[in-house]
Length: 317
Image 1 (tube, rainbow, N blue to C red):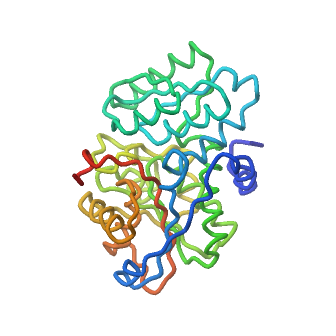
Image 2 (cartoon, rainbow, N blue to C red):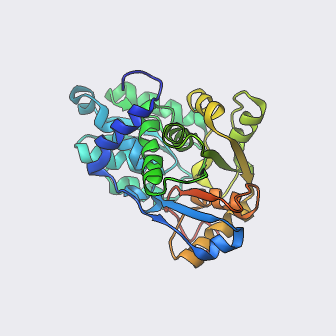
């Protein structure tokens, strides 16, 4: 990448770089859901992405952007799940090791995915400090390149490719809604939308129990998350200075939803669309269904960010 600021050209180049290694995911519709909110809803189904989430886009872009010398020492990260699996898969595709720091509380399905892709897991306590401390030891010992789950321009550019595809398939969207945890997908989407369809509004959906992005956006300064608690385990992380600066400049608003709304939206998709999404992926739809975001009479693009869900632990068994 030419600098540390993410430009639209970086997203286009990322799309070319990752194309052999990711799925171009489908856009789906549901007339029942349209009728419930009085709008045309379009769903970008990243639950059908490699490793089950949009995270594969950023991980592949970052891994395949490394020089051969840097790549030979492997890559490392800390992640509760989807980025961990995505990075392990991307590293396997390039034939290099992936060192993953995960909290012991991460869902078993996500731990198993990392192991399945050949990732080397080190478990830690479920705090950011514990993650960073363990990661620092691994990087010092191995020389591996740290690929941050979202605070990395290569990752943000990769995530933005989902929005490029979305707007190619449905060019006249009035608004786009993504979940927001660390802000990589929302940031990349906002940059892409600004260049492809500047009149489209861009929103983030966030759980009430992990609402640092909402509070930061409203106050105009970065407020870290403290003890987040939500069923949407993929959205527990806080924004970074990089993602917050992009979101503050380009995003229209952040909408909060509670866990009951998230669970209801997830089940509605399972029952009406017959596809499996995880709680984090249901957050944007929950914002629409709960009328926290008014889409009546408009064409709304909603990102289903992933489908890595355990029926036993996510309240659906």
